[in-house]
Length: 171
Image (tube, rainbow, N blue to C red; front, side, top):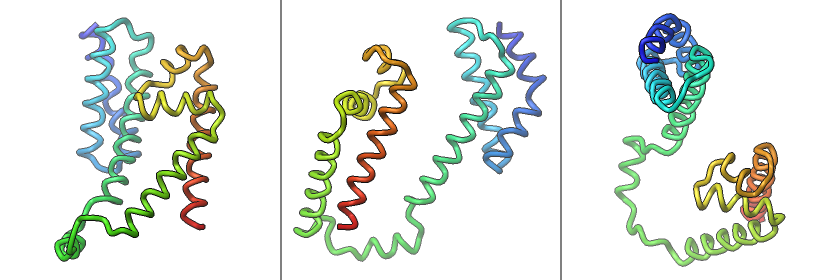
């Protein structure tokens, strides 16, 4: 399978690179993405046959490229710039003030209330995914429901909790 994978990868390399480049807009990152897609295809092929290697590579490149963009955006939002670093050095204490402590406690209570207010299955789905780290397919099998139901329950839970927390921030 390795020789077949190599041949298909080389045949598709240009289109894989093009697809990754359209998403990540950085040649080095695109190269990294297609190399990682090859490694993932190789690992998947070791576990069993892949029906359509070309499609598998293209889907993997797209998913990895989108993950790269999300990660980069998150880093841009939360990384400290040199100017911010100078401001943070001037912070007197890292210990939260009594007011900050109270705000965090109130936010935690709103969060707990939001979780408690969820329908039972949506709450179980959320806990299994976010606390226990289970995948949607594993949750679906465990609860005896479809993956779509798990997805919809998770969407309901996340929306409900975001609304509850946002209400608290406004109020």
